[in-house]
Image 1 (cartoon, rainbow, N blue to C red):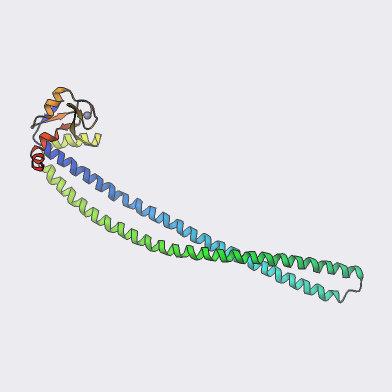
Image 2: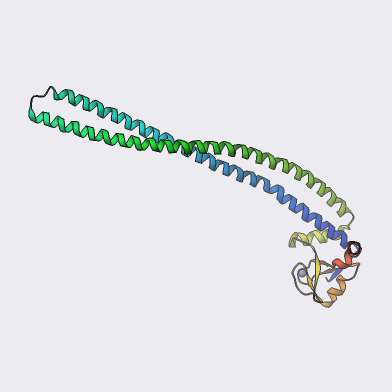
Length: 252
Ligand SMILES: [Zn+2]
């Protein structure tokens, strides 16, 4: 097959343009759920960060509480041992109690220092927690807004698509059934069915597969009522200058 006698080339090119627009619109519409999922995922990340900082703050507070309890216990121990000091008569027992009191005091000092460190940590964790809460709230509002925007756009795109499909139907109705079948068959396989024959310093190439056209094919595509077919990729070939002659002249 080297070509098809037809005067429908221009309509086919327009049909393909319409189909490409419809495909692009479908891709756009199909991408919306992915976009929403990605927004939700980022939001979940923020939520996790907020929960982590909340948990961290809680953990440090619990740790501080434990240390405070231990410290109160140490203070009790010291008081108890000091009372006992008055009751012991034996020198060795007295010495032992004194040692114990010293040890308790040292341990109490250590606990005190640890509590101070924890207080500093609590200050930092509180700031972080507040920051993350605020960011989370902001992100939550942004998320709702973005999703609303996408939903609105989706409705708009679907309405546009409906019009495009209707126009495509009208266009296709002007083309013979045989041609439509050929066109759709090639387009299904190659992505595009009708391509321009390109000219470059006197040589002609297929706009689909880039192969150089044999002289006969060049003669074919230059005919107004003839649609060339590429010997290599089987795509239909047209020459823009020929098919859109009047339009190109008007533009000049
Ligand atoms: Zn080709």
